[in-house]
Amino acid sequence: LTHLWADLGCVRCGERAQLRLSGLSATACSSKVWCDKCSAVLAATLRPAFLGSAAGLSAAAFLDTAGCTLADVPRFGLLLMCACGAEREVSDPARGRRVRD
Image 1 (cartoon, rainbow, N blue to C red):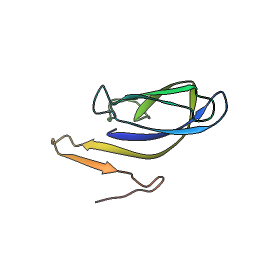
Image 2 (cartoon, rainbow, N blue to C red):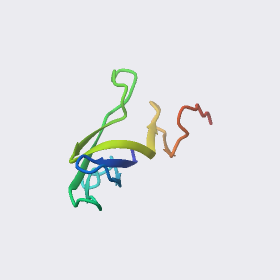
Image 3 (tube, one colour):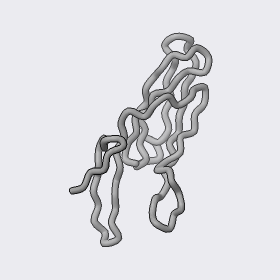
Image 4 (cartoon, one colour):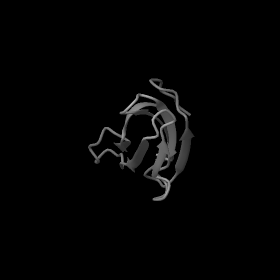
């Protein structure tokens, strides 16, 4: 995952907040924000997973949260790599739809 926007819900009051996380650097994979309603700290850490035919995983990443729950993932981007070494970045792909270039 190159980037992920996470809509988080505060566990104390239910207020929603949004964070942008990135799987490309160690400093951008964790972030926190304060709840506008109750001032609780909402924190999230993105743990990207390697996907491949031999990986056996069905998730592109895992999200660890503290003081909040994940409500939605409105936008994300992927970095796709071919066995030949070619790379392609796909930003904000359409959900539930196959696209072929």
